[in-house]
Image 1 (spheres, rainbow, N blue to C red):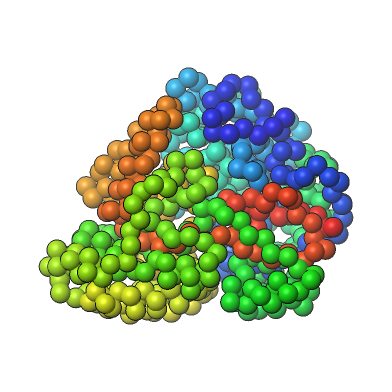
Image 2: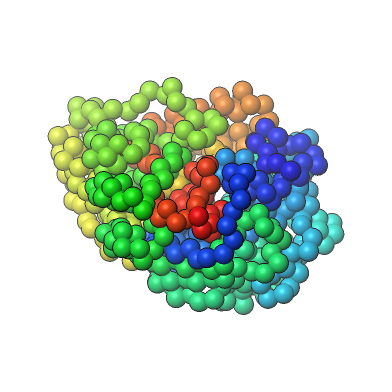
Length: 516
């Protein structure tokens, strides 16, 4: 069986096979051994509650090793089944029937079935829910158990991308009636069973015997993920052989890694973007003219050259990237223009502007330096930026979504609606610019329309217009798209095709890689 593209999502009775999910070349994989990864993006507040996950350490630990989703985005970008074996839709894409795999067990021996799916999804809704997947699940008006291995979802409106949304790393499957225990102990259906977990420090797990993916995935006997948030320490750990692989290499010392014959660099172009969200419900960012002034006051090419050292491309204030189907590559690029920035300040009734920008390398490597470059370029327009270096630990809980203007990064999403519904739909938990109300009425209208549109040409037209609205009026500066650049010891074999949806092979190196 093979994975399917978005164009094939609506075909009924299409099964999505496990083998395709690995993205592995057709060559023998060595079973056994251990993978030790040094990963940034860990916090002392980390837990097995996938609703709270926002960075690579827990995404790779939970979604990529210990737990499973209903579907999975393969390394080549196609969609394949994970706990769902196949799915089919009604003609209007409002009703979806998912056929679940039989014979799957959780790590505590409990059988997996329809009840687990329904209860796991229900976790994300409710008035007080802060889950980033809340808008995805809230779109489901009915969840019906047709049998132990079949679930029907009825949506409020048609959504051609719905099976893709079921691969969201927040929507992992927990055992019904035992969810609190599963979150406390890390009890999933994944390839690896938790042995130890010290939040913000380390996670170890061993291969789960008789896993339903069989010999097609999960080639290590054990895995160890070590939290190394400091970039220099992470590089040193790889250079000295303490770890087999690291994420987010330091571009400034990349030459040292390339000079080491025991190591290799993986560089993948995807939709990862470095952003600077402004809270548009807070002055002065509630004025679109101030937002436009900031957009013209940043030298995007300088950031790509000096922060990414060429490992990426200039952004245009839209999160839709080159790996998306409806990427608007021909849209006119915003350029650095201090005179235009001054003009929009005047339109806002200002001669100058004094603001603060919060940053930390927890947001992205070089975020503080990026803020200082922005400070320098914006000064020519009368915009005075005070760059505040925030602590790395607790950055995502204390700064992001709280400080009016800050540094951030997004991995992007495989589909346009997935990205927009996660971070730009009015009222969703991760709308980090709080852009909404009358300010984004046309965008919100198009979002709902494009989601249910099954005609590709009409959908493209709508998504192109949405990208232009974000560029011209949105509350998020997206100055650059960054390649995923990570490093691996040659004793570890990785597939010929490495996933570009998340860092570290879609966060699934424990599933797809092996000892060489």
